[in-house]
Length: 80
Image (tube, rainbow, N blue to C red):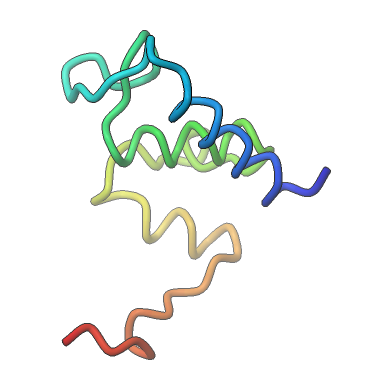
């Protein structure tokens, strides 16, 4: 299974599991997540060390993910 498949399966599994909800106070899967903690947790589960390298919320994700090889494509998107 590829890292992308592991990431996707983790996200789908959490989304289908009713014991998880949305919370910023309890955001690391015990039992809830917020948007960025779910993305970061799924990346870690897939073997991409986002949290291990310092991503802890949306504001720290971009530099960590680009250092891990992800590309910032925002400038190529029509955001209007």
